[in-house]
Image (spheres, rainbow, N blue to C red):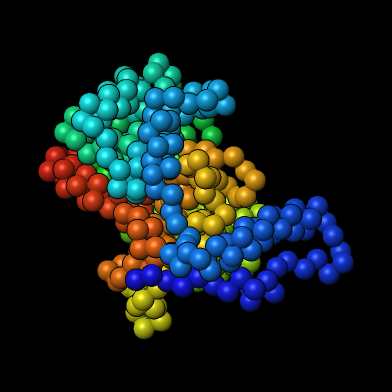
Length: 406
């Protein structure tokens, strides 16, 4: 189902008003709105001659991503300890675009990720580095996206479970690496890989739900650790982790919903990550991806109070922001207008676009040409829906390892 774009003249009244009390924050907000307004105005003229606009630049994005598999500019040197992330961001983006790789490339990527697996279990940011929960999550997601027997067999499930035990804290939290920082990313990454690969045990995640709930703030979102500021990425991790535990009822869902719906910017249409911050394309998923989870939870609590046709945010507005303001004409997507393209924002902005198009089993809501529709994803893991289901079916056939803490 093609969706109509908003009247940009009508939404101009939603622009920020500083009431003649400018601050550095308000000045930055108004600069962003000016750059967005220029693109909205340009699009308003374009749509007069092209009724299918805006258009997803599929071929440009695919070419950018495939080139990035073998060549990255010098600016990516700082991500040497994040190489499984680079694989995951690229593979997931290509998956959403319905782009496939030849079997030889699939095998090469799987073998490279195998070199990132630590002898002690878990995956590192690169060959020969120390294991860490973040690249472990990225590597497992990448291998599950590849979805071949070779890719699945790379994962040493028993050692992976031992690694999770080694970074578990007595209070149910998880360190990102042995002796490392503790934050809500850790418990989400641990739960995601444990559920996907069928190494989850109740003992491994004993009390984790209570620790997660302790991270919910007075605003309603979740922080990285107790007492910190609510943040979109951490809020997603907290809600998704509780979903994986089946303990969503322990947190204040209504407070979280109130906080997260207010993170969608009224003029731009995209999401901000925190209160009084700027719009950012990556929060299209970190905030937008939480709505399918919230919808399921609220439906279970009271089906009559939840829409049967839409998520609880303005799906068309988010799609407009992504398609009009976040696409680089040479391929790749961006944080916001004037920012450079990168693989990270390409992945999470496309992920948010997919979420905004697909509602449970209803007809897709697609702004612009119907060819803009992306493949659906699994909102808990953020990998393709088919890849997630295939992975879960594969590993459910295998016995759960019964390792113990060292």
